[in-house]
Image (cartoon, rainbow, N blue to C red; front, side, top):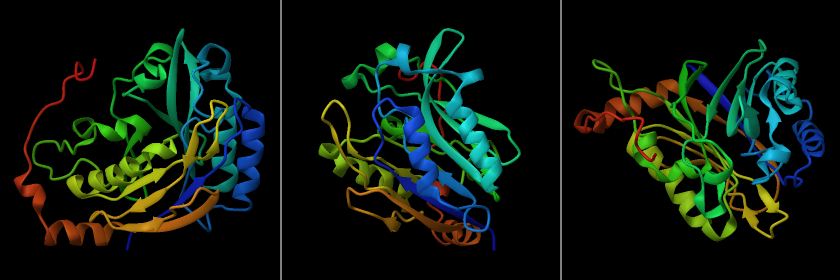
Length: 271
């Protein structure tokens, strides 16, 4: 049976202090490694908190200390580690989710939907590509925070002759406590409508702007039922398991995908 051991890291981030956050996260992970997990998931902007100070805080992608730290963590621990951070590349700023593998290779996804209520769309460039990675037989669609509100962007888009495009959806976030109910509902809704597990990791604590974060990090199965559900505002590191065989059995038993609407997604959506 193919299983994916997934570790959710719900953390209280230090404001605009990458070195302190890297140190804190390393200590929080302890000796966690390949014998315990396949995938470690950190919150959105794990190095700084949800900063709009992009010009001062974004790290050059090629020389980023935080990207190098992700690569080192993945290699040393023998598992994939992922989280988003502010980066600058070719003069543009991105809220970039970096997927670091144990062999030192990297994949990245740039956040598509920028949170205009905080002015993110004025300080960061929009991503244009959906990114699916593979781990332990699971195809995983990557997303960041506000993306979760846009079901068309995250909808299964299988190629002709295929039934599913991906097997799990991953979303990292800095989702404030006043909107904790939509966060929880949307994680479960995306699971139900796409017949796939959802991995959702949010931060806790309070940032320099006075915004509080309730956490509510969840691992949700394809029926929308929580496998990990921590409705509390304290840090934690917790690992859950996803089964590819169980997912295939459920999709066969409840083949709603056979009645799905087919569509194409143009790059102009949301532009």
